[in-house]
Length: 171
Image (cartoon, rainbow, N blue to C red; front, side, top):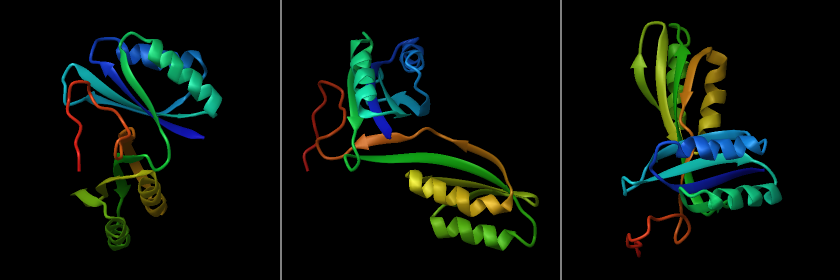
């Protein structure tokens, strides 16, 4: 089972290496990892997607919480979060395939970022299902290159993480 974990950490040198080392030392492959500053420049948010059973993941969360630079850890459950990923795809194009590729891109809500005579560069942002669907639509057209970010996630309602001292938003 895939788990999406969000971790608030102190924005310091070496924190990413210590956290990724914790996963590798326990034999876990990280499927996706995204890190960025939060609203507080001294704090970063890591979104980690990892596959494993609930028992093993519970151990990982306990180990994460023991690290001195870790502020908070949340294991998002299905429905408790919104997630997105960004992908850039370069696809080979010919005069015969151009229209079909453009229709595929439009049908999924992606955008053409660069159109040349031999290739088209496409940008899309969305959840895992949308990104996977776009890749499947474009696979028959000779994908030349793919670059994707890691998954980022934000808790819904009262779930998730906030930097201490910041007010919660009430709707």
